[in-house]
Image 1 (tube, helix red, strand yellow):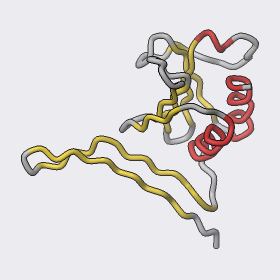
Image 2: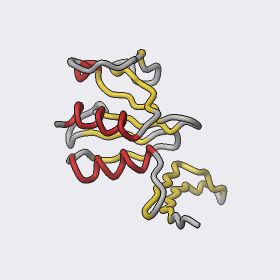
Image 3: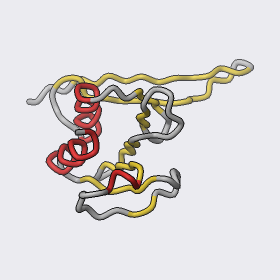
Image 4: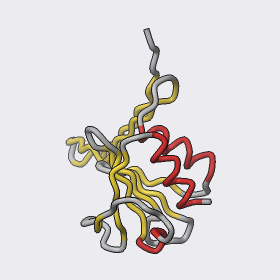
Length: 124
């Protein structure tokens, strides 16, 4: 039996006694290894990016920057990773324009190896 421990953070805003969920973030802190938790742990150890947890995605910016350097959007069977078009140079992966962030492109990551290779390319 594999033991997995999750860290769950939910932010609510209460207006006139009615709570509204603003964002939620779940991360594996022990055991297991989802693509999202692998990416979050790698970014925490290897970059100085500031994390912005939104309801549907997690964005990463450099201090003082307006645009995200990286956006992680968990999907059922893959992790969608968005990043600025300027960082594509030398990277051979299938991408498409990101509809939510017009300055960015996105790709679908399905394995931890693909994810680590992409993060190393983008931030090393």
